Structures are given as C-alpha cells and as structure tokens.
Length: 150
Image (cartoon, rainbow, N blue to C red; front, side, top):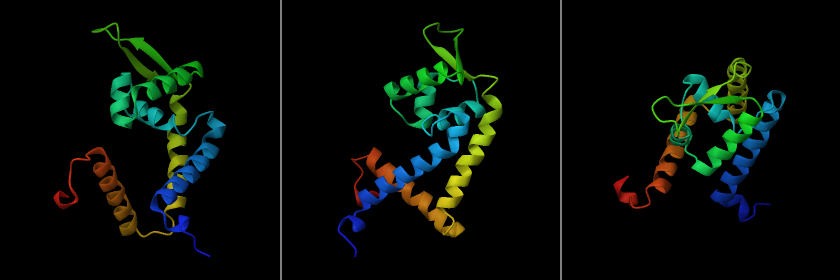
C-alpha cells in the first residue's frame, strides 16, 4: 500500500542519502575513514597543500564542519598541517605518507557504491540524474532565481 510518505520527494531524498551514507561508511570502515572525510582525502589526493578555506569551497561545507573534520583527521594521522610561508596564520593541509596509498582504494569503494546505486539506470538516465541534482542544487543556492529564468 502506497502512503503519502512514499510520494514525498523530500523523504525519498533523505532516505537515499541515509542509505548512501550507511553503505559508504561500511565500505570505508576497513580504512578507518568515514564518508564525510572522503571528499577531503580525494581533494588532497588530487592536489595537496590546500588551506581549510580552499577545501571548504571545493567540498561545499561550512568552516566549522571542515574544522571539526580536519581536527579528527589530524588526530587519526590521516593529514598533516604545515604553516604557510606567506601567511603564518594559515596552514596548508597534506595527506600523510601512510594515507596517500589508501586514497585510490577509497575512491574505488566509493565508485562501487555509486555503480550499485545506478545499476538499474542507463548511461543517459545517469547523466539526467546528474543534471537534475545540479539544477536542484543551483535552485536552492540561488533562491532569487525564478523558475522562469532557468
């Protein structure tokens, strides 16, 4: 029997996000990493020596959230911080030598979860899903944009 909740897009998106987080956390567990830390590791794997502000912009999280994430990651030996040469108030963040080899494996695990999630979709449907999510994000980030302007 279908309920009102079954038709509620907000509920479905929350449920999908919870399922995705649980699955990602399970895959990351052997590496002692959480899904919240994965974007930081991926960004630093692509380009080390980023500041906290740069990571916030790339990953699209607030400063306090990033500060807590980085503090835990540093405590757990996943990253190191080095004072910037130009501005001693800022620190550049790098992967530790022990963490660097794990990043590719973690990205593979992430990709496995996404492949499983989209396994019933054609390539075109996956592309459409990306576009729809991007549109929804833009709409919420720019509340002044009317639907007619899109």
